[in-house]
Length: 161
Figure 1 (cartoon, rainbow, N blue to C red):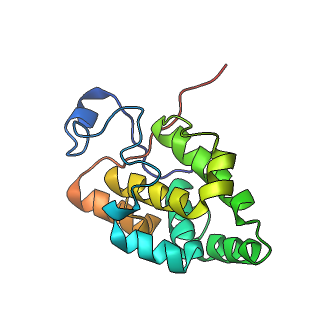
Figure 2: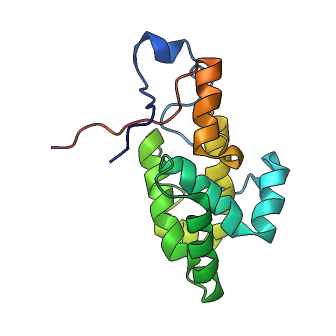
C-alpha cells in the first residue's frame, strides 16, 4: 500500500531525535483551515492554479506513486466541470491518516466541497511543517532526508483488525 519508500514511525529513539519531533502537536493540525496568510507563496499559487498545489501534495501523500503531472491534469479537467473536490477530498483523508489528524472542522468531503482552495493550502502547509516540501517532489524529498539523515515524516497507520 505504501510502496518501498522510507517510512516515518512516531515512536522509538530515532523519532525523538528528529528536529521536528518535539515541536509538532501529536494528532493535531499544525495550522488552521483559514491560516493561508502563514504561507503567502502557497496561498497565491493555489489561488491562481490550485491544480499545481494539489498535484504537489498528491505526489507526497501518495509517496511518489501518483505523478504530480497526472494528478494536476486530472484536477484541472475536473475543475472545468466544477468537480475537482471529488478528486481532492480522498487525498485529504490519506494525509490525515498518515499523520493521525482529526477530521476537522468537518468531514473531508465538506471541507473540499466548500473550501477547496483553503483545504489545499492547509494540506500543503501541513506537509511542509512536518518536513516534506511538496514543491520539490517525492524523490527530491527522499534525497534531502537522506542527505540530512532525517527520518521521513510519513506515519504508517496502525493495523486494523
